[in-house]
Image (tube, rainbow, N blue to C red; front, side, top):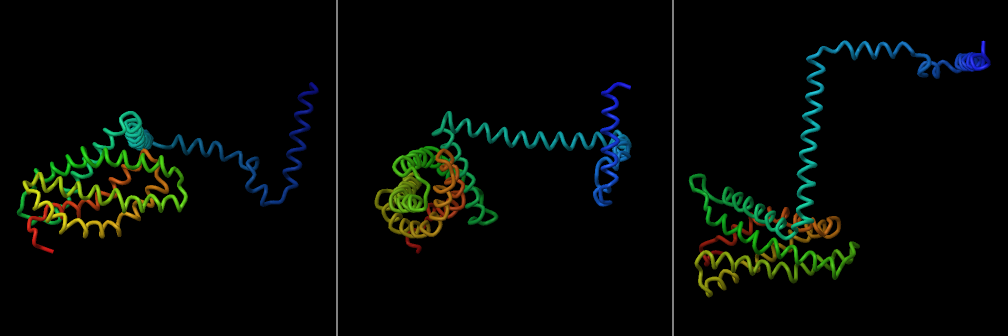
Length: 250
């Protein structure tokens, strides 16, 4: 017997002796004590029927496909945000405003009333041509003059949004809708007097929470998406306010 084989036999003998000297609870769970597990596992795997194996493989493949589709859409959207930031944000805002107006009509209209597609079209145009580009410029402007994410800087951004962006964009919103509804200047001013201040007061209760999450935790290129997502809930109310017909109601 060669010296290599002798050394191997001595090593295995010493290992077996050491293992037998271990406490019972160690030997119970040590892999050397359960060589019979391996053929048992093999037999279990081989005992599956072809139909069961096919169902396992199909379920795993369908799960991986759905996950890849989700990841693929997110990657595609992020690439579009990087390549065409203004267009992507504008289309996103337009789709959200469309969905919000349809939801608003569904909630506020009677069951027999038909959808006002002209109204929905006005909201879609506003979201795409006005709000989307405005959000892009506003959030990029804030990130340049206030680049940090600490609490004090976040509060400053929220206050600027309430004092500057909110009043301006809501004035544009009501004026835009009034003009497309055929109202003259005096009627638009009357609508602003009636609706602008209540809207700003309501926004002061709603938007600071959304803005805090947006400015504190969301990257700059995704902030318009977060803002538009919050605006879905807000626009349901805003769309109702903008399309009230009786100027004398409270």
